[in-house]
Length: 307
Image (cartoon, rainbow, N blue to C red; front, side, top):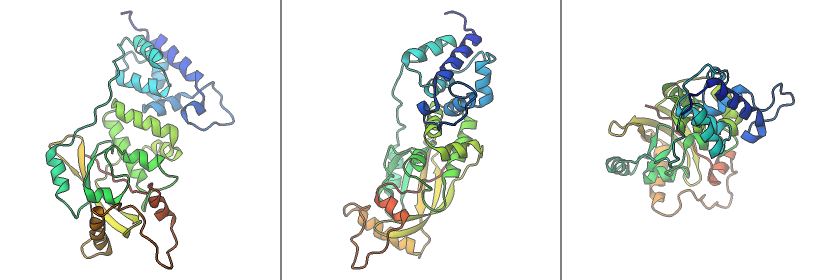
């Protein structure tokens, strides 16, 4: 293999960056742009790496970018397979064959545990907030509580504003920032950050604030179309037997109206669609914006749980 030349790699990155327009990656167009194509800072943001690090790549100062960084840059630059293979070759690396990412498996023990809590909504999620398994009451609590849903993506892309009270999206972004600091080469993380940066202005703004914190508990208000408003506490529990997975549980204060609402929701969970709005009486109450979003299958409050 020919010895890689970091200056040639930098020239290639610069040329591909200058061919892109903001609209190509979902960024807003501005009236005045002093450079052709995208700015270096924009490519770095889309790739989930620092602007200084990307500048070093274009200037030929970094001689050993990792395969994970190159893959993130290929996604940010919208490179096809041939262009991605060439990018890896310029860095002196072989382009790894594409394999579909395998979703982490939930052990039978964890599934049995959350299913044994008929009065406690609970689900298992990854460190990137992708739901892996839910119990019946959690599924009844929100239409987004299904395996395969990424709660961060849902929080920013599935509605037009804050999801619930309070708005937990800043906490979600701060948790992702913490994860990025711990493992900047995580390809799933850089792909998620790149997608959200391209498609969500609120995410770009919150990501740029560089807040870093972990949060394993909190409280939120959920407006459910069948049982009304629930005020619930949530807690993220680390699963020692399953690294990278957490059990998220919801609870209501004993004797509260929310506890009674959970009991009614548990009954509905086995009697048809628990998300179908109740039939209105002679004088139906006015629909709030929150209840309307939930009835449309959009409203939920994502949980924040980090290890």
